[in-house]
Image (spheres, helix red, strand yellow):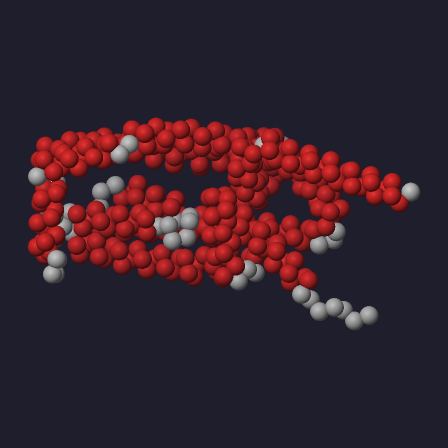
Length: 348
């Protein structure tokens, strides 16, 4: 009798594992969409509760909130596409002028100590004359610019498909969220016992704290540095500020934008503005990444600073951008299990 029960249990475990593997295999290409929908739903769930209370219908509130989230995501992307197209036209015109006249030597280059004369001479020989500029531009074109553009278009279409399925999944999560939550609790209680709900709360708190610590702080960095771009007199400060806010969602990602802005100022022989912008932006990013973000994430998750960094960067390395939010959630649950297991045994 016992052997029959054991065989049935093993058979059931095998079938469940096989079905789980097949389900993951079937949904593999759409797992990022499901993951992003889960992160967005967790981050905006209090707003969903308010919409449902005010509108009185889960379906209507789900549609309204999904549209709102879609506009918040797609709207800035449309602005970036139009700005990118306009910048592409300007780049093409700039390349045409470089072909005809060459790339003029910046005034500040010859003023550099020790290497200024050599650097200016090299620039004039390799970039300043029209012949050298034509060779440089032609070499860049032969390195596969058209192929890169084609690959970029394919990636954009793929991301748009993922975005569409993300919003569709988000709609159903908003509508059927309470039922999904209750079913998840029942399954977790059967699988993990009483601590399951506490682990779930730790994971949800980690996701919300990470959204606040990464996205909101990143947008704040973009706003502050956008003002700095305006003060520095750089062209397209709003676009650069928005790009900084988006890239700053990844810790230490903002320097990619503001260093490029500083180089643009230096190319215009505005060294003082470039140095001041670099110093101010570095200070803002240092304070945000080393003090503000760890404080926001650590207060809600009780994660130490090292675990926060490991969760963010480890998740980014393993799962891509989605890992920024999944990594801290996984480590928050692991740390909760560790703390529970590390408690001294109670005396009987």
